[in-house]
Image (cartoon, rainbow, N blue to C red; front, top):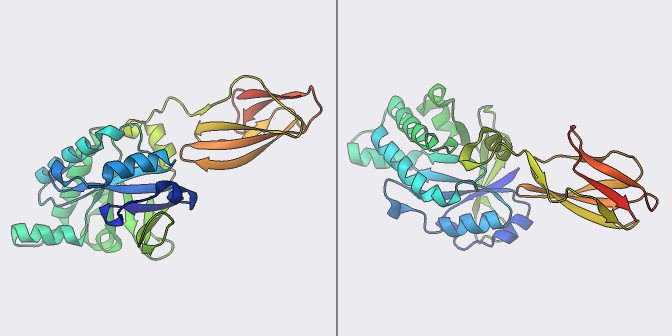
Length: 296
């Protein structure tokens, strides 16, 4: 999946144009530090418009914490900022820890943090955040993963790695930032580009994270019998897991996968059989009938 990450630095974004350009997910800066006043000025606008445009959305919080207690406070502020989007974000919430974090910490403490201290701060934030039901991860670069963090202690969380090699060689990564100079319709100037390496919408929904329901795998907007004129097309929208649709009786209709928008897949059902023939439409992996199509 192709994605971007943005903050107020990108200014006003045309999210419909972003989606139409082929971008499937966006990670938004929610804020930084330990004050609600440090919420990103564009976060709410971006969150509402990106989800409305059909993108999968997650967020990140930039770390300025020097201690685990400060990190836990940042997690609680982050939770409050995210609250309106409970049940709406389908990507993890990441803790952004990088060189600027260390420079700030050194200005407060007079020294560089140790490998153990960095790891403890990140673990404290993510443990606190996950206690509220959000799926957490760390955003950092390859240097931190290889040299500056104890990744074994963070193995229970997601990893979003800034690694401009293509593709990343780190099997732990669920997402890779691949460029800081991308160009995307709807955004003026450069934007960070990302590649999704895991199906986070499905994983988070199955785990019941971010307020997402794990009870419903997929839902069709059509469940009863529909009549379709011969050689005409009917469109059905299936929200949730991206299932394939197959007919129970060959030669009556042709299901054609049209597109995926956010959490919904649109299928064109083309009627090709003789008038009066009908068939059930089923999930390809097995399961109950979705609906019946009749040729008229």
